[in-house]
Amino acid sequence: MSFDLSVWALEDGATPEDVRAAVDGCRQGRHVDRYPDPRVVSFYRAITASYPDRRPGPDSPWAVAPLHAAHDHVELNLHPTCADQVLLDIERLAGEHGLMLFDPQDGSVYPPPARLPH
View 1 (tube, rainbow, N blue to C red):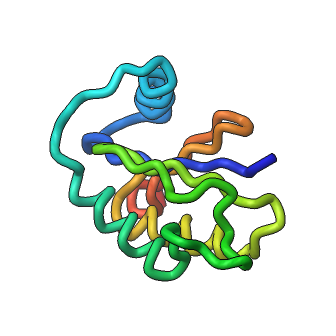
View 2 (cartoon, rainbow, N blue to C red):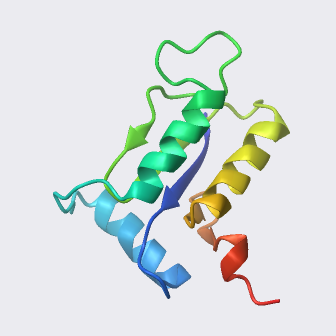
């Protein structure tokens, strides 16, 4: 069993409900064919630079590799025993790239830190 997260590149002003609707659309096979969002590309390159998903080693955090990357999101299936640092890095990189973080275990959506009210 894996611990799953996904990061989403939606338009400015997107709400948690918008993220959940995008997740639902993806699960139902509704995908738009377009160029990858640069935020998704940058996030993918950054996370896989630290934790490779092509020919991962025995200490890889990925339960499923390679990662599923689409034009507007990246799915991250993690081993439940992966180091806490991996989760912290995912959260940090999602924030740095302006991505919303979706936790399918409980349906929570976390906006990037820059979008949180102070």
